[in-house]
Amino acid sequence: MRAIQWAMAAMAVLFIGGIITWITHLIRTAWRLKDVPSASIGISLVAIPVFVTLLGVILYVFWGLLGDRGSPEGASAPPAARHGDRRPGESAWKP
Image (tube, rainbow, N blue to C red; front, side):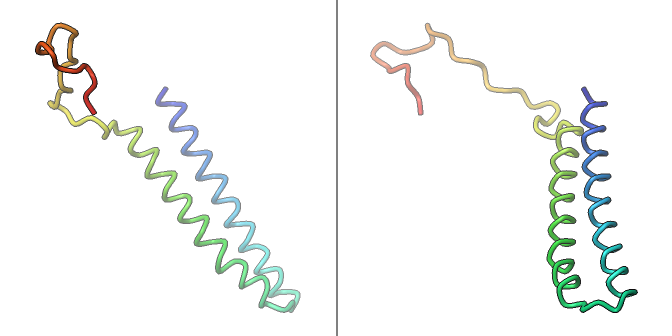
């Protein structure tokens, strides 16, 4: 299961890295062809930080999943209530 999680994280890095590389290639091509830089630079100023933020969120989630940070060691879950543990007249429903 961990290999699948590592593979998914690696695919996210490769995919978003490819998009950022592609956008920078488009900017360099527009610069070389002396194109109007307003559209290409404007789009990249928005797109690159969005994809970098998305990559950060994805890696943060996968790091949490891979590190099992959801349950600290030594902490145990509270025992499950059994049917006979209620007092007489007490409701089974607890919010």
